[in-house]
Length: 277
Ligand code: KIV
Ligand code: NA
Image (cartoon, rainbow, N blue to C red):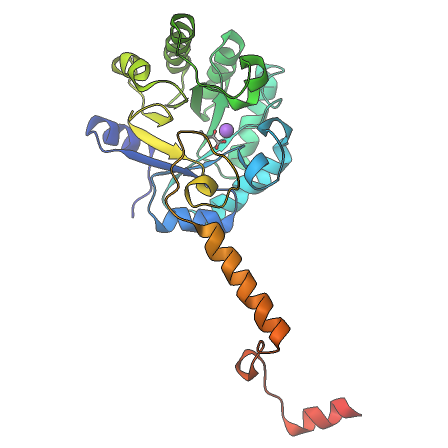
C-alpha cells in the first residue's frame, strides 16, 4: 500500500472516503494498526493513561512520548504518523514549541505533531510550528490536557457560549496553519454547523461523522478496564483473549505440562557428559 500523505488525506476528504485513525503506543500496536490498513496512527498522550498508568495525560514527558513515537514509527510502513506533544512542552514560548515539534520529527520520525487548544497563545504556537515546516494537527472541543481548566472531562459545545467558542477555535486553528483537525466530544449537530467552513480533513471522536474517526486502540480492542467515554465502542475483547492465554500458560507451568520436549534444544551425548563433570 502506498504511503498516506497529506495530499491523500485531502483527496479522501474531497471524495468523502472516511479517514480511519487509531492510536498506537509501541511496536506491537503499530503493527496491528498497520495490518488493519488504517490511514492515520496517533501516538496519543492517552498513552500516559493506557500504557503508563497515570491518572491523566498531563503527567507524560517529552522523552517518554518520544520513546513511544519512535517505537510506533518503526512499526509503520504506510500510515500517516501523528505524535501528541505533551502538556507543558509547547506552552512556554513559540521557540519552545518549535524545538519540541522538531524533536518529534527528527528523533521519532513523526509525520506531524498534534497540539491541543485554540486560544490566542495556542494559535501562535501552531503558526510557529507550521512556519518551521512541521505539519500540525489541531485538536479542539474537549482538550484533555487542560480538562481541569475546562471543569473536567466533559463534552464541549452544548451551550450557546461553548458552541460559539468551539466554532471560533476550530476556524482559528485552521487559519493558523493546521493541516488536519481533531474534534473531541462535541455534539454532531454543532460540528456539522462548522464543517462547511473547514477545508482541512476533520477527524472526530465523539463528534459525529466528520471526515474520519479516531479511537484509542486499547479502548476499541478491549484492553482498558472500567468505564469508558460514551463515544467509545468496543469492537473486540483482547483483554479477555490475553488474560485467558496467560492463565493457560500459568496452568501448564504449574501442572508440569509446559515446556514439552519440542520447546527445547537437543545436545550431543558428549555435551551432556561434559556438563555432568
Ligand atoms: O491522546 C489521544 O488518544 C487523543 C485522541 C483521543 C484524539 O488525543
Ligand atoms: Na491526546
